Length: 280
Image 1 (cartoon, helix red, strand yellow):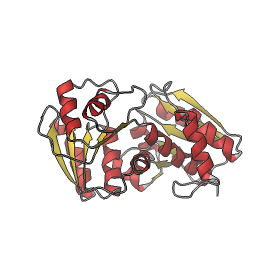
Image 2 (cartoon, helix red, strand yellow):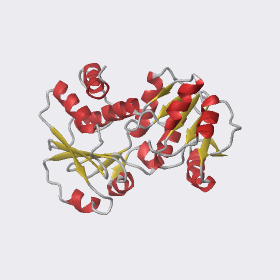
Image 3 (tube, helix red, strand yellow):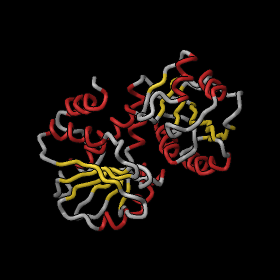
Image 4 (cartoon, one colour):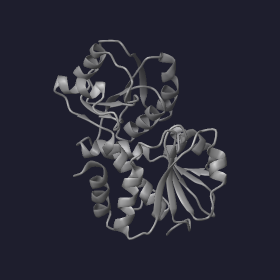
């Protein structure tokens, strides 16, 4: 059952010109036979509340990228479990029942890893301790992980992740960024910006014992970490898979009101979305 009545959708962020969301969503709604429009708008964190308040009933929902996920969380009258855990909302459903917030990044990570053959894990590593690392912790918990090493330049930045880990029954261990003594793990998730500087010896040390790398970056590819994984002979995948699968969950939300109900012809929808951003 469709919740809101509008037919307009957008992705908001600052910057936002790089976003692939319009291609993904347009491809999905074409398969579904829906004459909806999906655009992009550059919106700063300071201007978010005013822009949101100015939307009319023709608006159905929004996708949010940085730096708006915290502001979208605060604007939501109701939130899903993943959003509550992470404090981040990347999807807003607008309607008469009020603004509902969702975090589809978590599900995007889970599905991207499953697509790479990862069905369950005991332990993993996260590189970086920013906002995306919160979603990565929750995603790893859904895959069964009970220990996560978080490699960060500032140990203090790991504290919020450790607190979240406690809530999820996950042991979070802070690891210095420049150490060469890493434990071997089957999966690493990199949450650093694509242009973040990483010294070659640091990247090589991480790759040597890092297993599969899921790097959430897709615009600056390959990253320094992906190149190190290549030198080590390990597999590295970009964030396009995460982007694809989190967008599929957004389409479910915008058409059906929540992320758990499959779409009509979902396999065809996913194939069209994949073709729109990956070409295969």
